[in-house]
Each structure stands twice: as C-alpha cells, then as structure tokens.
Image (cartoon, rainbow, N blue to C red; front, side, top):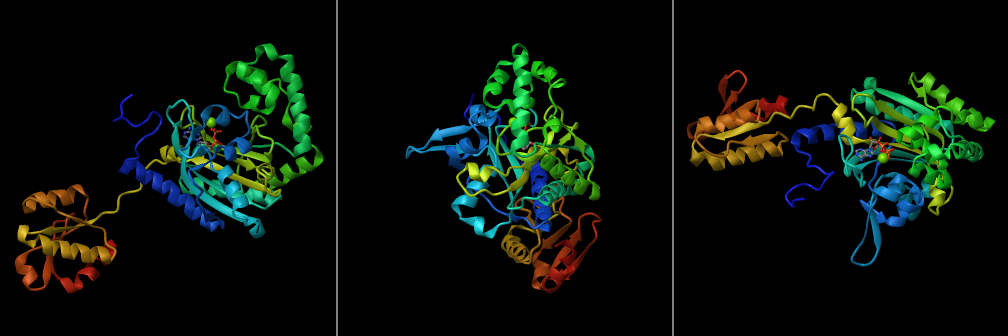
Length: 414
Ligand code: ATP
Ligand code: MG
C-alpha cells in the first residue's frame, strides 16, 4: 500500500477513457430525453439506513460491500452502492408523489467493497433510469425499450442478449419461495455456507449464487413459472407481447431473480460474452414495494442501471477529439496579440490551442501533436495590415485573411 497509488479498486479516468465515458453518458442522456426522462442527482452518501432498509440485511451489498462510516457528527453514513434507493428517498423527502408519474435519469459514481478485477471496481459508475408511478406492463416495456435504445445507439446491442424473467406478484413469490425452501432444504448438505444462510433468511438469493456446488443444484430446482398465479402470468404475457411487437428479442431465463421482497414481475439483464466473467452490462426490473418499505406511500416503480466502465469497454472506438485551431505567434513579441486572437475565437465558440513557447517550428510541432486542423499565424507585418496567415495543416496551403473575416473563414471548424 502506497499513498501515491490509487486505492485498490479505484482508477483514474484519463482523457482517452474519459471520452468513452462521456460518450456513454451523453448517449444515454440523450436517449433518456427522447423517452421523457429528466436527469436528477442524489448525494453520493446517504444515511446508512437508506440502503440497509431497501437492500435488505441479507443482501451481498449490505453484508459485504458497503462503505459505511461514522462521520464527525456521529451519523452513520454510507457511500451509495446503487442509485435506486437514493431516488426513492428523494421521492419521499421531496414530497414528489403529487407529481407522479415521474421519470428520472441519473449517472454517477457508486461504491462497493468488492474483489477488484476486470470490469469489477470499488468505485465504479452507473447510468440508470427510474420510472415511478406506472403500475401496468407498459412501464416495463418502455423501460426495457429505452435501455435497448441506449445499447443500440452505442452500437453494442448486437453483442448483448436480453435475458428476461418474471417474479410475479407477492402471492406467486411466496408460493415459489416455499417450494425453493423445500427443495434446497432437502439438499442442504450440498449447499455452500453462504447459501445455507440464505436458505433461512432469503432463499431466492441462492439462485444468485456463483458457487459451482450451488449452481449444480439449480438444474433440478423448481421453476418459477410453475408458481405464477393467473394475474402474474397475464402481466408477463403482456410485457412479452409488447417487446415482441417492438421487435426486441429476448431469451427467457427462469433463474434470473432478484433477492429482495419488493421486487416483482419483470426482471431483466442485458448480458454479453465480450467482457469475460463480468458479463452483465445492464440490470433492472420492477420494484413496486420499495418506496413503501422506505416508509413512503405505495408507489409502483421500474428501472435499470448499467455499468459505465463495462459499456465503455464494449464501445469499440472512442469518439474522436475535436480538432482545435492553433494560434501561433511568430516571435515572442507577438504572444500577447496571439493570446488576444485566441481569446476572441474561443468566445466565438471555436476550440483553440496556443503554441506556447519556442521558435515557429516548435510551436507548429505542438499544433501538429494536438491534431490541429489549422494554424492562425500571427506575425507583425500582417497584423499591421489587420490580417493573419491561415495555414491548413493537412495540406500546408496558406493565405492571408483579414481579422474581420477570420470568424467566417473558420466557420466550418466550429
Ligand atoms: P454483478 O452480478 O456483476 O455483481 P450486480 O447484480 O451486483 O452485478 P447491479 O447491482 O444490478 O449489479 O448493478 C447494475 C450494473 O452495474 C451491473 O450490471 C454492472 O454493469 C455494474 N456494476 C455492478 N457492480 C459493479 C462493479 N463492482 N464494478 C463495475 N461495474 C459494476
Ligand atoms: Mg454485485
């Protein structure tokens, strides 16, 4: 451990990677707008209870992954491990219920104490949406369609598969839970220690286990679909029908569950084989009980979150940097004049870089390194005529342009 290293599981996002990052966020934000979602932000830390209550005392996040500490005032706070709990808290504390339905988009850092590996960090970043106040399958269909649109727009959807399942309503869930408990109790000796604990406290989460011994038991485990009541079946059929009619392909995965009681009906993930072990890029579903669990009025909700790092890895080409215009003084005595011209062009919304020091050749070399498209050469002779020399750095062609016409000449580089 060295104080000069980033903390394990965190990393610096340098400009090349940051461009990919921004591309993911900008794309998601733009698509969210098209679907009527509005961006919001919640604090990066909340009272620990916000997450303990919503994620449940037995979830991996709460038991193993949260960054929780006591602040100087004695409050127990947690760096947020995910976005939904904060949004639900904001809905309640902001009294936003009167405005339902509400549609939110968010992006930002999340924190989980996990074992770092490729695609798994301790500080990672998510984009996500929450659709609150829509109880019917239309909400689920739209949330999934919006997620698919983000992946399509990023050019990665062909490398993902949409996995879909339903958890049904509360009654169906209880029936399934009982069947699961009965099944796994019969095979208790073959369960991992973690899953034996889950069997008592939260049996559905056993299906989330990554332990191979546990997974070997899944093949014979009861199927959720056999425990859905007619209303739940109907809900799922309508979601599936909606996706079909929008041409959104999916694969039913009866083992896709969410461990917490407030999840119901639709659960989905977009997964990929292109990232090795960390294959889930986007996960979401319906969480009708969540706001109530937090102490607010019963409010249906559906949403998803996606890892920006994982998406950025899937995006093949980082978007190109904007090519700047280089303003280059000819001789040190022209530096102030060059600065003034640069400042003027920047105020006219051009991206402008300066050749800072050295002879003309050195300054032009810097312009080249910055991939500048053009150089504005500022020399005493031309300037006395109210002009500069404009050089096309790709072709080497140059001509004199009056300062008055400069903005217009550069217009296509804005
Ligand atoms: P996993 O099964 O990979 O642990 P999860 O079920 O914990 O994922 P969610 O809580 O549903 O993941 O979060 C949604 C998305 O956020 C994931 O699909 C993934 O893309 C991303 N994500 C989650 N945890 C991490 C992490 N530690 N590092 C990077 N990305 C992450
Ligand atoms: Mg996880």
